[in-house]
Length: 479
Ligand SMILES: *[C@@H]1O[C@H](CO)[C@@H](O)[C@H](O)[C@H]1NC(C)=O
Ligand SMILES: *[C@@H]1O[C@H](CO)[C@@H](O)[C@H](O)[C@H]1NC(C)=O
Ligand SMILES: *[C@@H]1O[C@H](CO)[C@@H](O)[C@H](O)[C@H]1NC(C)=O
Image (tube, rainbow, N blue to C red; front, side):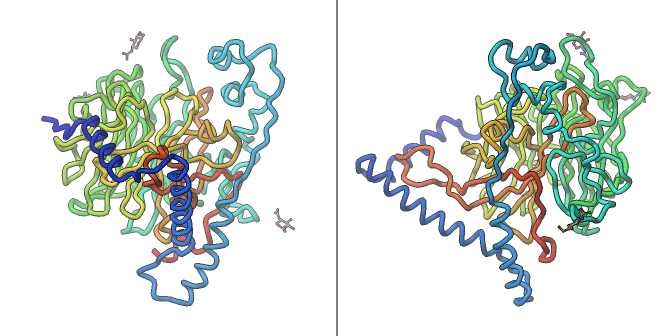
């Protein structure tokens, strides 16, 4: 039994009622002025909070002050708006079928160029292997993220962890990055099928510094022969995420499992005693009896974990708590973002508020990200705005030509996160790139959606475009 608690409309009605009753009765102009004043005040408060990372655990006052000073300088650097000026080349005779199909006759856009494998701008989106990020070379580029460049592991091979997520394992004090291992040929199963790579498995990489990644192997492998198995190579395994259950001492992986035509629309669950696997595949199901495609799991501070998935043909999301052992969903769930057609959810929490970044649904093509926020994880969730800052308009409207997959908190910087996204390369999926960028909560106050309301409810979530950036020094000292 599924208890869809409360009708969304009912909730909205109540919210609107509440809003109305708190709205000051005056003309629009003065409300606007008031909202600007209050907005600026809140902005100042948020900025102050942002610039003074709290380290409750830290007793080394001297180091703390030193770090605060460097934080302040560093945050300013991360918040610099970096523009991209890319000249779109003149229309060409031949364009790849993919680009031509999308926009038959009108002028080309940067997205068309992005989707065109023969575009002269190709190297801007998919820089040459020669520019790889290589952790074995400790030169001036050490510790710098270069979003979009090929990223090598410690053995010199491109990292294969697409649609992934990162687990911080407190036992080994190590970060583990799990994702789709896609190092196989891209093909179309049939004429109308999406570009795909056969399932190989879930790749796992370990790191202490979030930059140097050691390949821990394929921790959940495809099934080669048994065609009825969920993980038979002809099927689909996407967006694997792992959390640790401190009650059972198990590492639990959830993933989207599907057939090549995306009609199975289920979640799969696997389990291991170690973060580096091997993971044993348990089973798949349609959570709460609903179709489930893009998904993520989120472990809250109180140890309760939640599944979030796109459902009802990707028209809405569902969210619900997992059982205590994290191996199943419970019979409690809520429908959220109904009719908004969002996918690729990445959920995080900041100072008691829940945030989520999602993408639209346009297959492998990039589209506009949106931020959502909620006071309670079970909702109601409100949709805010596009979190992307910098680049240029097309960069922002295409999430820097990438799609959200995970938001990684950094324990010593309460308002700084790493936004992890995939720049899919549908012509050669194994060569899809990683876009890691700083995500900050606070700073500029979000534009109120509705001036009647007076002032904004939520802190703004901002993802800053950088061609090159690195984490603040000592980011992992205060853990
Ligand atoms: C590193 O930076 C220094 C100073 O900017 C420069 O002189 C040197 O050539 C750089 N080294 C490499 C390997 O790029
Ligand atoms: C093939 O996989 C199915 C589903 O997991 C399982 O029930 C069956 O026993 C497997 N067959 C063999 C021969 O392993
Ligand atoms: C997927 O759809 C195609 C075309 O509709 C069909 O030929 C094929 O058998 C389907 N494959 C699966 C695994 O359902």
